[in-house]
Length: 436
Image 1 (cartoon, rainbow, N blue to C red):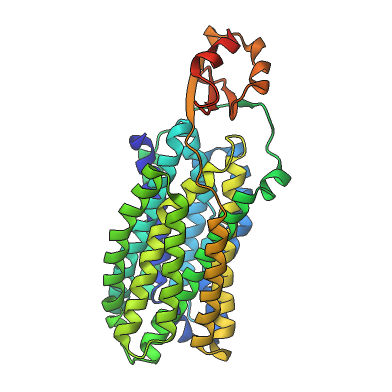
Image 2 (tube, rainbow, N blue to C red):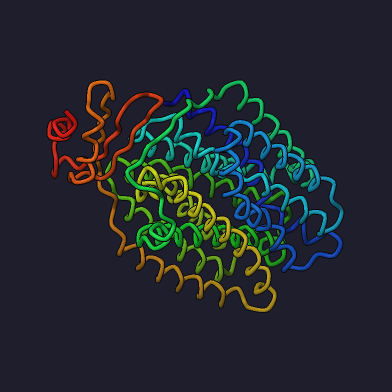
């Protein structure tokens, strides 16, 4: 599994590294461009997420018809072109165009689909967690590299680096990622959009992704602006906040992922992260010194890095196999919507509403969010069996519909029947007897 997933995870990591590199400093950079306002700066920060949200489904459909690799290459090229436009922009509107074009290369769902093609069902949560860890790692690295490189070589250099990272990702994709097998599935049910949209657990995960990404975007808007404007810091000094934030975030990431995946305590990790979000914003909003403000930033990063490695994995656990692509597409769209609105709403209210008022509102939202997650169950662990089609009678497959199993499907390429079940309700031998 690792040989197949590691290159794909590295592509996602490189792409997010390119996006995250500019996050710690882009608000300050954008404010100094011709025609800028805080509202336009907010759109610049979250704008890429708007086009990500819009193009997630079209890129997913394209990958089904034209192939995964070609679609990912197309998305990375768009991302590289958008990065170049950002690098050469001299006014806020050109920068906005570049950011929107960066987001148009919406390959997140395609990479997730490719992971599903390459790994077995029971390995997918691990693969999703691995992808989440790579995103969180890119996030941590960018917190240090962005301000440091931006101060040394100019913030526009970060966009050139982002362009290069996109081109490197294309090389990794073509040379290191194996071609996905031609897999066709026959499901006992079709994906039902209404059923998915109304699923209580999926709704809670969509809201979680929306709020988590929205709070992240707003944090990246205010952190550099407050430090430079209120505490008279220089751009080159921002690393003093981001380095400890990165260190503590990385330290929290591993134990959180292990506790969630190994112990099955996903809900508990989400709630702890939400509590950290609320505390961090209150500390940030009422800080009287740069030191206290920095402590609030560190607390925020701890909460964010606890969430990030488990989000995709947890969302996928609440979906049946034939629904997973659609469920994750909707889940990612909510996250990108949160990213966009976090920047836009933050930009609109930052000028007119005091920061202390804003953080109180955010703390209340976090409280309601935590209560929502309390009502969400941890996903149950299930077992899988794979039966060779040649050894069993497919005419008896209708019996699986009536049996006490979670789901089943036929992989015609590998010539196997895949069955997901609860061992407390039905045994492996009983399932085999149904098909003999």
